[in-house]
Amino acid sequence: MDVIQYVVKKARFWDELDTEALNARQPKLIRKMLRQDAPSFENGINAAKYQNLTRCSKATATRDLQHLVAQGVLAPVHSKGRYARYRLDF
Image (cartoon, rainbow, N blue to C red):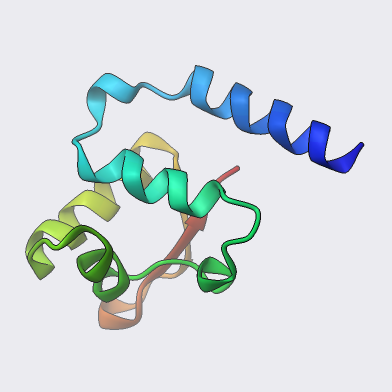
């Protein structure tokens, strides 16, 4: 039953998400974070991890993460400078 609820919740999340406002890198991150077996995101995502995942610059990673926060996709866990971390607002 938990798996079914999770799948329904995930489907609703994608339905409500404005995917046209996202660039090609951002859905890749969201898909990876939504996987149930994604322990690498237990503590959230930071710019360095996003850079490694999407192969972009630090500035682009920071900009993309801030855009996802503005869209309401990510929520800050810790938002102090270089230690900023975000989790899915799911």
